[in-house]
Image (cartoon, rainbow, N blue to C red; front, side, top):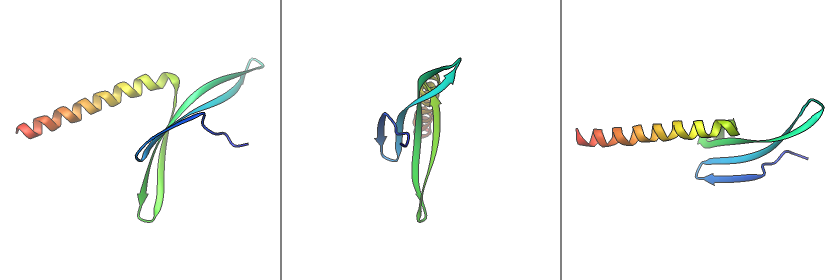
Length: 83
């Protein structure tokens, strides 16, 4: 049986999925979740995609970085309009 995400979200060409994973540690099977973010696009005649795989503790850091980037882009856009 193929590993399938337990939940998926999509907005345009960006998708995200939550995965359940298992690993063995100290003779015990531990379950944990990871997240994958994927962007797809068509390059000439071929569909392509790239993925970023994250652990739960990575998500707040990525959100913070994306928020800061968005703020900077929007603020610079306003500055460019004012010039």
